[in-house]
Image: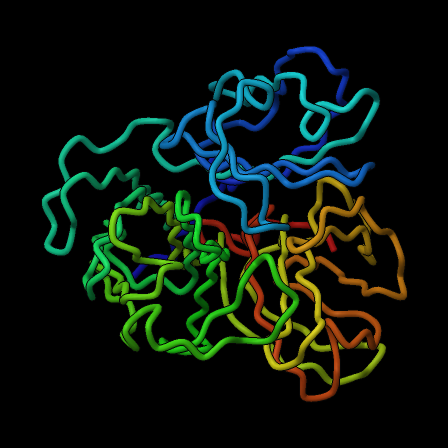
Length: 355
C-alpha cells in the first residue's frame, strides 16, 4: 500500500501569532477556515479563549485555565473567515500592541452535519467531521445514563477533550482522555494534578472506530447539560498522541512522530503540581524552543530554558534539560503533536523539513 499523508498540514492546523490593536480587525494567513480556535494573549495575564464554529462566535469558554461555564460574548470574535478570523475588542484576544497566539484547527469549514444516523447518537447532537485530518467536533446533551456517542471518524480516537458547557454544580473540568492511560483514567486541562482514576467518565470502555462511551459523571454526562467534545484520531505524518518516559538527562528522550512538529502539548501524568506545557513554531521558531504557555494558567508566556526546552526535528522532537515536568527519570508524560511538515510526503519522498 502506498504511503499517504497530508502533504500540507496548514490546510488543517496552524499556530498563528498576531498583534492586537483593540479594534475589530481580520487576522489572516491560516490557509484554512477555523473550526476550533484557541487564543491566548502571550504578553499579559488573561484567560485563554476557546471558540468553535458549532457553538458560534458569540459563545466562548474562558479556559482551559479555569472550569467556567460557557459565556455569551460579542467582544471576542466577529467571524470565522476563509483564511483566518476577525477579532473584536476584548484585550484577551486583541490587547493593544500585545502579541497574541491563535491555535487553529479546521474540521468541516463551519458546515454542521444535518443528520447523523450512526448508532449511538442522541437526538439533538450537532457534529462536524473531517476524516482526512482525523478530527470531529460534537455538541451533545447529557442523559445521566451510560451511553455512546458517534464520532464519525471511522478510526479509534486516541485523544479526546470534553467540556461541560452549562452545569453550575462545579463539575465542569476540561476532561482529557489519553489512550495510554486507559479507559478508567483522565487528566484535567484546568489542573496540575496527576491522572484521576474515574470509572464513571467513560464507563471503563475504550472508544471504538464509531463511538465513544460516556457514563454518569457530571463532567461528561449530566442529564440536561450541554457538552462540547473535540475528538482526534492520529493521522500518519500529521498528528500523533502518545506518551514517553523521562530519563533525567540533558539530552532527553527522542520521540518519533513521523513529522516535524508545529505544535506540542505535554503533561506529566504520574506526579502532582506538574504543568501542561504548550510549545509551537509560531512563537518559537528555532531550536531549542522554550517559549512556554500553560493550559492551566492565565499567565503570560514564559521564555526560560530552566523550565524546559524542546527541539523540533524533521521526524519528531527531543526533550532538552532535566525539568521534572518534562524529563524526570521514569516520569510518564502524555504528549499531543501536530505537524508543520511530514517526514515523508504522499509520494514517498522525504519532505526535507529542516532540523
